[in-house]
Length: 307
Image (cartoon, rainbow, N blue to C red; front, side, top):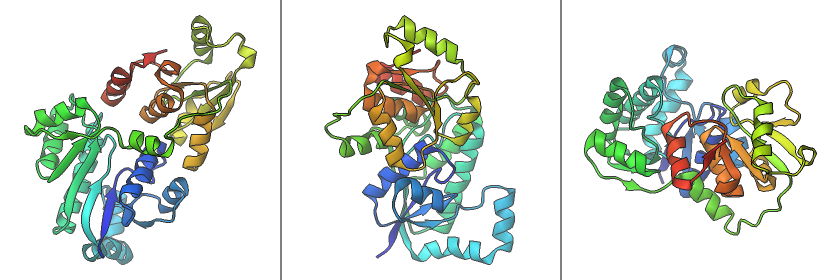
């Protein structure tokens, strides 16, 4: 029996992407995962998974491809193993030209290497305000894929604008994954506030806002944890931050923190998504104005306020 190849931004140290992988593996258990780091991906999803390295998309990987027969063999052996390729979600064609360019390259490699395999894009987040270069690359890919679904209405409109095609809005893959794993949502809460940021922030500003919103009677009652969704997030923790810093290595560690939290103040998309699911929209805030269309769209859909 041939297998499914799952391709996404896996193994790059981003928790949101690993959550997408974990969800996709439930839908496609008989899969090979294309990942930058098979060990870390397997550790996070808490499953033993079969992995393969990424197609070459840069100078170092191109050199490796030229001089490493084992690397080439792993990629070309996929021809005999794969009958469908799934890009299972995330904002691949969003925000920056570099991202669109890299995923265009990955798509070209996939198309040329696995000529007989069906290629599908599922639960995708597509920006409407892409630059002209990004629009050309994204249009090229989407117009050559048989099956496309998106995760929100804004992405649905973006695809319509790009290729003139109405595609299905299946919602966010991680949201569906959470709903199936935590159907009751009866969590034991603590006086815990989770904070996430991908840029500079001020703890004193957050304290001031919490007092204004009368979230707790006394600041002494509150436990703070800064939760990094990528290791680089930790470099933005201010020196006067009184709480702990966490970078979960497994999805169980991640979910345990959100189950205990009473409030979430986030910046990255999946920190806000998890906050809304585990704490509710009224107890979830964005740290500042949205950094991307996907965050803005989610805030609008769930009525989430900016702190």
